[in-house]
Image 1: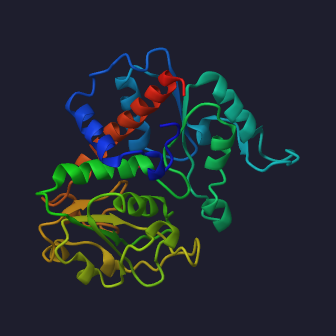
Image 2 (image 1 turned 45 degrees about the vertical axis):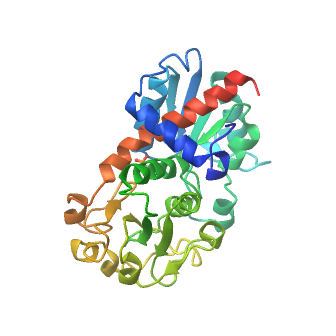
Amino acid sequence: MKNFTAVSDVENLQEIIKKALQIKENPLSDPEKGKGKTIGLVFLNSSLRTRLSSQIAAQNLGLNVLVLNAAQEAWNLEYADGTVMDGNTVEHIKDAIEVLNQYCDIIAVRCFAGMKDKEDDINESILSQFLKHAKVPVVSLESATRHPLQSLADCITITENRKSDKKPKVVLTWAPHIKPIAHAVGNSFAEWMQEMDVDFVITNPEGYDLDKKFTKDTPVIHDQEEALKDADFIYVKNWSSFDEYAAMPEVKESWMLTNEKLAGTNNGKVMHCLPVRRNLELSDEVIDGDHSIIYQQAKNRIFSAQVVFSEILDEIKSGK
Ligand code: CP
């Protein structure tokens, strides 16, 4: 694995899930693997899970870990080429990445959608600069359109919780929100589910369909009750309108998942990537109830990161 920014970077999904579950059995099985190598974790946006799980994963492999909370602690970055930097920006992203190349053997970066310019976000204006200028492997810690480490953790969690060999029904359901939220988690989950042996459907209100580039031929059902019928896994997430990009959402409280709605599922397990706004996106009764596997999902973030860092270290060592 050279870079990790999308499911297309994974050669064999079932194999990598199996390896992640082996790592979960014994996370310290290869504590010297990253000895003498350094990973830089660059956060241009806030994080709890991604920051900590990546750090634990890297330490389990013996990597040196540099964490840069760039938005708070580094210089104000310029992203546009050819700009006369006589305003508030102090360091160009190209220079920052060239310097990271001197210090790091792997660069991991979190760079959310700006939710202002649709083209910029669709084209991954920041991640693409890392991919262009980095001379070492790049790992996405969530970018404008995808959150691959989260999606891999989601696949691991679904695999652990499958009840039988029967193909599970997985429903990605839209949740209410008060702010225009990015599409990365929803897009990414859709892409990864298309690679899993599951029956996958998406349910969201009219006007909130995700970008077809990610959902492809996944059925999109606008009646939530119908979509949830017999579901084995229900993934709850808000995203804003893709068509009316960055518009303030209608809150639509009736879309919040409740125990009453879960009654129509196949004793479905409930997932959410966190953070979650309680009693807006998802009710207390569901988060704290028996259906929830949300914290297991958060724990699996460690093993998704660890298996990815491990694969990248193998590639570095092979000198390819
Ligand atoms: N799920 C997730 O990525 O959490 P953080 O934003 O806290 O990293």
